[in-house]
Picture 1: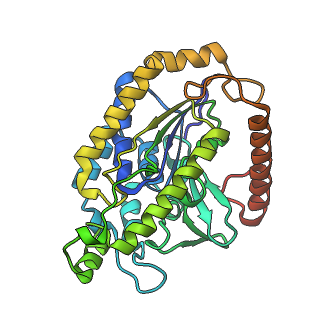
Picture 2: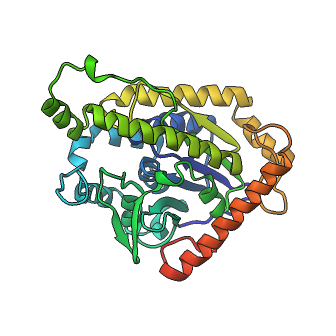
Length: 340
């Protein structure tokens, strides 16, 4: 695995979002056409899956071909233990696509998971790649958690669905983030509008075809909370270019809408680049600002103006907490997780 050696270290961050993550493919198509070449990659959940494949040398078109030929129902398997889906088929799917370890990737990669017992954010960038990605994509209540290095790990989107900070830990000083976090606003279908019976709704939910009313309320509650948390993280660790797609009609289980979601990603990336003045302007902004003493770019295309003292204080407090957590975690689990 080759480490970034240029003065400018360009990071790609892909958020979680289930089937909504197909929009990342459209984003990457636009960025590749613009000439983007990334040095490091970070991702959560579906962003970890696509990010790992991308870091192994795949192109946006390769990702599209993979998504198009994959029957996503074949990637899940039922369990009667802790959740609906065991994750064995997901592991097999990942094993067929990825090298065994992070070190064998073409680009440095970091994936985020959540320690479901301590509530800590866990950043993995070394060692067992398949298990790390499987853990990052363990959607709570859907996939069984992963036991790794004495930890019980679940979906990274619980604590950090857009891990810009993880790209920074890999050395990125310029970050482009593709954010498909479910929007705070969405389309709600009331039970009165649904003419199917409860069993048909339950079967359709398990088959990833639709949501029953209970699942709809649970998912929407999670979506709203996650959207707020992502915005908080983004205010503390802003990406230099954050490409957002609200897509209220597409949900995490909308795997049958590949074409439409990819197109949404392309349109979102084109709008974001146009607003930034084009890809050359994204890079020129780095050249004008340059990295400061901490290695972070001093300009931001998505957060103009000076930071308030309160914002600076909150960032320092948050960074100190994360640094302390990372140090403690490295002592506990050792290799395979991000160390300070």
